[in-house]
Amino acid sequence: MDNLTHTLTGLALARAGLNRLSPRATWVLVLAANATDIDVVAAFRSSLDYLDYHRHLTHAFAGMPLVALLPLAVVRLATRQPLEFWKCYAASLIGVLSHILLDWSTIYGMRLWLPFSARWHGLDIISVIDLWIWAALLLSVAAPWLGGLVSSEIGEVRRNRTGRGWAIFALAFLAVFAGARAVLHERAVAVLESRIYQGAAPWRVAAFPTATNPFRWRGLVEGAAFYGLHDVDLLASFDPAAGIVFHKATGRPAMDAAGRTAPFQALLRFTQYPLWVVTPAAEPEGAVEVRLLDLRFGTPRQAGFVATALVDPAGRVLTSYFRFGIFRPRSPQR
Image (cartoon, rainbow, N blue to C red):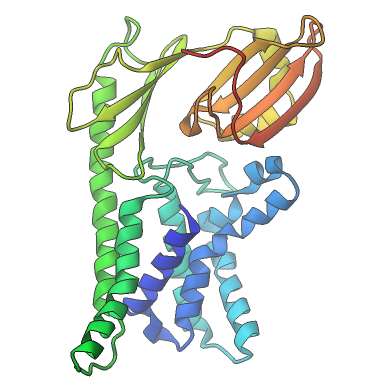
């Protein structure tokens, strides 16, 4: 989930009543709602380290008690005043938990049970950026301010305009919206599972949310030799033949060689729907370019997570690297 959503959620939690725990509970909650993303410092070393360590221990349940101490330390140093430790620590734990729950709802996933298990968990019900959630949280911030402007215009004097009611509304909307998204996600998965693709039932299917329309999902179908991407509109009929098909690569020796390198190993630990793309390289003669991408975040035409290797005819890996961004294959994939 994006940092704006986390920040607004922390502010809503404070205005809903947790700010009564301590005079500085609001600052603690806003910082705590973002504290788990301290792991982004790994990006300063390399994009590969970011892939390995983002949503690592700081996003795991076992890391919560330690991460929750960071906001208290920051507020204590910034204000140079003592804190009501246990009250602020309780608020901080709630803020950290809100971040973990929101991130868990997205397609990126979480390693919730580190250091005991490195398995990724994700509910796939809410987009990393969701405009409906933005609207509800921004309304909870703006409504009290707008109400104050209206009251001043008509000469009405009202005190203690805390916005508590709007904050409670935003948090309730967030909970109900997530529940509704979970129900719609199950419907989208059921639609995908009930069809035949390339003459056979799918091995597995997935449905990923969009940022604007709760009824529209990005469907992913895996078969023995292909992946299919489909637009699933729960308010319209679904045609299993209308998707885009990506055939799985068959260049096994080159793929095995590339798969032993650190960039490919890191991406294989992360991806849940890996697509390999093997194409002839311009040079040296007989070499191939091997790419591995995560179909949750793009396609061969426009990929978000990509590991690339150049493998010579003897099976030696000449170069290997990972990056975020866009690459375009030499020939269009269908």
